[in-house]
Length: 321
Image 1: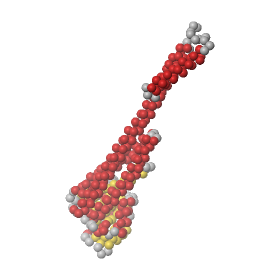
Image 2: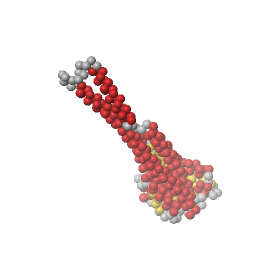
Image 3: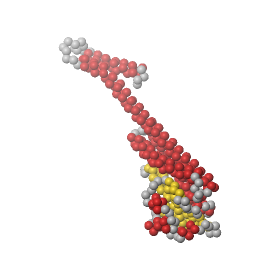
């Protein structure tokens, strides 16, 4: 599916669907256009080579194997490989790819699935002419800005899950908490592998002298870079929090283990003299004191209870229990 938005001063923004004479749009300096390819068929993909004349390596990255976030300068156009991340507790982190070509007077996007930030930009194009009227470099900034803003939603969901894990580790820590923590750490590591090259790429837009990005637009790219920098720092902060959660969990488990060992040790210590007494009075000697004494059984229990109470008092006084 191909959707094209074309801006011309005397006609405003016109939306079209299907294959158009894109080579004429490229040659017309009076228009600014956005061509969006959604799951392009073979015939539609050929337009990228035929009408637009994009390099085969760039097309391979756009509709074939994905190389990862990057920007390539082909002189007459820029190729930008961008990533958007979504997070759901049950499914984990999900990364979507958006491939963008920046031309002198237009932008071409290629994607395999619906992506909410791009759909939001499409809705704005129908109501706000200024989005396209300012030029292709400003429109690319609008696309990148919406996609980076989407990371805020993703980070809020991750933050909510981190907060829940942090609360539960104090309330009822178990093995399920550890699994959730490691799943979050895995997702954050994946997020870092995506965000780090995106941040470097946006830094190049704000600093490098790409001929297709004017000096006025470059200032706006700096703001997008700063936003991605905050996302990167937030991901680092979440990972530090999860490391602290793991430390608290293992400390809690160790404390419970120590408490159990202490109780068992106290029980064993109390039983030690009792075992000695029962062994002593259980010896089969004919001549033993108290053996034929009428109060011998009560005397034995008196000694036993006295030993137990005495040892508990001693442990309590030493604050061992």
